[in-house]
Length: 339
Image (spheres, rainbow, N blue to C red):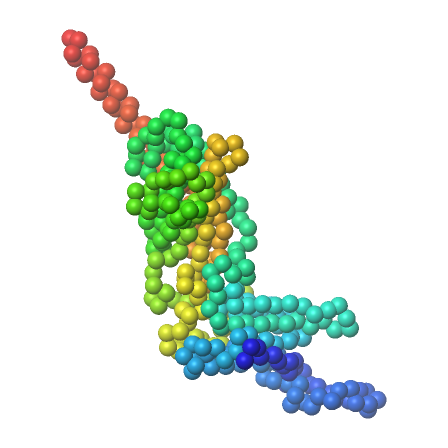
C-alpha cells in the first residue's frame, strides 16, 4: 500500500460515556458505542497501530506493508504525546503532523513511515544554534602553527588556511571527544583534497567535511531503554508491545540512514575579506543518540579548531614556560662562556 489512513474512535469507555441521543431524544450521531470507543481512546488506538506497523515490518523482512501510516486525532494533547513518542522511537525524519482548521472543529493529522530516510532529510535538521557558525582568523593560524606544531610560513595563504582548519577538524574526530568514535569525510568542490597528506592541490575556495559515527549500526542501541517516558515528562511510558516489536530481530537500525544516528555537514570557505575561514555546521539527527553526539560536537568543535579551550590554553602556557626556560639557559650559557 502507499498509505494507511484511519479515523480512530476518539473516546475511552472507562473515562467517558457516549450518548447517541440528544437531551430531547433526537439522534445526534449514527455512530454506535463500539465505533466511538477504544481502550484508552484515540491514544490507545494509535499505539496499537504503531505496534502493528512495526510487527508487520519485521514479518515482511524489514519491508514495510505501507509507505505511510496515518491517523486523524481529535485532541491536541494526543497529537503532542504520540508525536513525541514516534520521534523518540523512529527518529524525526519518519514523522509528519499537521492541523486541520479553522472551522467548527479542529482536528490533527499524524503520520509515520518505516522506510529508510536520507541523512539530510529536512525533518531531521536540528534547529539553528549559536555554535553552528564560527570564524578562524588567518592571523591566529599563523601564530598558533600547524597541527604538527610547526609554524606556518608568513604570510599564510587561503589554501593553507583551509587545509589547516580541515586538519584540525580531522584531529578533533580522531581524538574521540566524549568517547564518541567519529569519522571525518573530506570533500573539496572538485574532490581534489588529498586525504593522506592534508594538502590542498588546487585553488578551490570551499571544502565540505562530513562527521559521522564510526561504530557499525548493528552494534549501536537505537531505542534508549533507559528512558522511562518517551515524552520526557512522565506522561506516557513506552508500551511494552512497541518495545518488543522494535527489539525483535536486528531490524531497528534499518530505521536509520546509511550514515547512522546523525550527520554533521561542515562547510569551510573564506570570508569576504579573505582574512578568516568561515566554519558553518548543518546538523541532522535521526535518534536520541544522534542528538547527544551533536550536542557534544557543537560544544567542543569551536574551542578545538580555534584552540581557545582549556586544553590548548594549557599547551600554550607550557610552551611559553619552555621558551622562558630556554631563554634563561641561553643567557646563563653565554654568561659562562664570557667568564
